Image 1: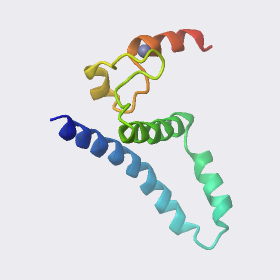
Image 2 (image 1 turned 180 degrees about the vertical axis):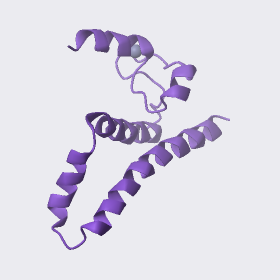
Image 3 (image 1 turned 45 degrees about the vertical axis):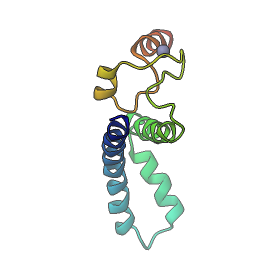
Image 4 (image 1 turned 90 degrees about the horizontal axis):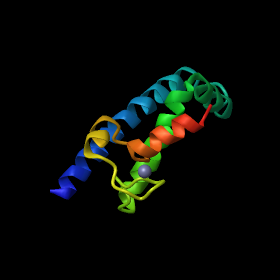
Length: 106
Ligand SMILES: [Zn+2]
């Protein structure tokens, strides 16, 4: 049961992740003749802050699945609500901590 849920989450995460990678691959072919390093930089620049942040969070979530800390708030160590994980499968912290952080950041 738990394993199946894990697989589901990995599927959702990798789907979102590969979507971003597909954009990556598409641009890559267009500029194949150009220097790869400058292309990579340009691709990262072309991503919005939100997309970059999301990619990073998905990466982190996949790592957490690997070390079984997935679904645990990174700030208070409580379990993240199931509803929240359905909406934001890569959420690193619970809704309480998230709200706290949003209030504190300008
Ligand atoms: Zn928390």
